[in-house]
Image (cartoon, rainbow, N blue to C red; front, side, top):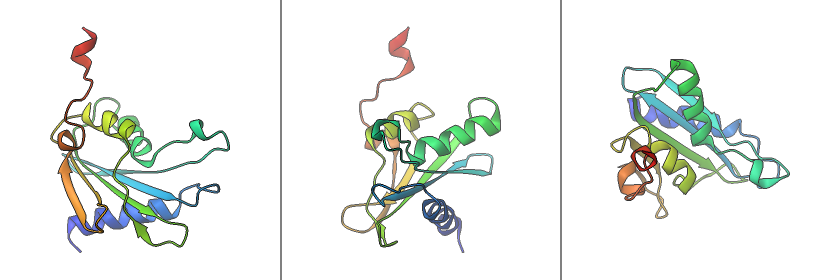
Length: 137
């Protein structure tokens, strides 16, 4: 299995463990660090929907917690499963794109596109005009 497949399988396994009792839409994500190593996350739904959390942001939080600082992220791989367990298209939402791009505009994001193909793009292509920390200075 090549590295891309193994990241896909890690994300798929995380999606299978997601907590999605309301929508049945389960998402898993893997953050791959440039120096090696990976961190997974899954979506966790809540009856108060705004309190739910995305897989991508949970994987980012796991990477930050594990590296005690600002991890050097190479890629984020996302897999979404519909209620029947079949993979469905699901690019990261806007909030996740914003969090990913703050770690670097060249981070590659892999996901299933709306046409069913798995693609990988730099996050800067998914969020071409991000709000960045420099705006706060």
